Image (cartoon, rainbow, N blue to C red; front, side, top):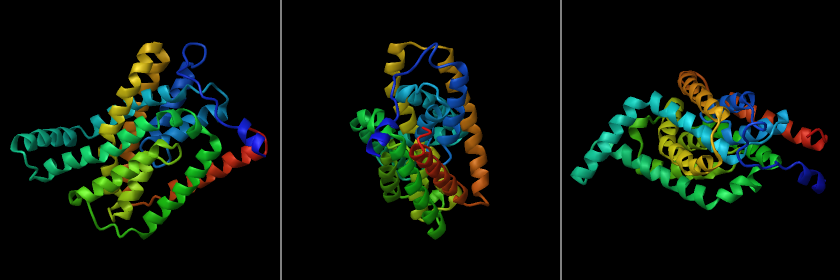
Length: 287
């Protein structure tokens, strides 16, 4: 059984060009990233599972990170007014040497919340490229976090809105965000889950998650850009980024509308079903 599991771990490759990663593959991965980055289902897990299930080359973590340019742009475009207002407030707080308004405080909360993820990302980069990409580990994290998400949604009081974010919320949600380097955890999933445990309303938990994602997503994409520039860029790369951006924008828009009236239960169930499918395929020897 151990040898079976060993043979079923993900094959990790650097960014694939030309004959390896086709435009069709790039479109698929762009859609997967655009959906998975903002829905609480883990984009990193799906970017690993898509090639594994569909039997095309795994482009590796570098291309995965490149797709974050698209979803980072989606966040920036969708929340442009909010982000611009917050950025101006941050500079104002530097001039005053004091954060007094909500926007000024929220700007610092975003910065605080981004620090743990940045540190973990650098320290665990090698693990993220190798051991963390095993399908069985992904199945486990998908299932466990699915249950935790359901519990948070079920028992949260949902009395707080984003105007009541505190430094404590920023620290807790930011620390939780750092754990999302493990595929299957889901950055949006764990930040929304933590926000729900902090008694935020569903839509506000999602909005906080999306705004908090802007610095860390852009930072991760820029950090990985050096590898892409060294390896060269092609049409598949650009198409994947564009598709992930468009799909990501739509994901943000419709998830926020969905959460105004509905729960996270459908995402928890999906995670459990996907985890069961992965384990079944491995045990049956199909993959």
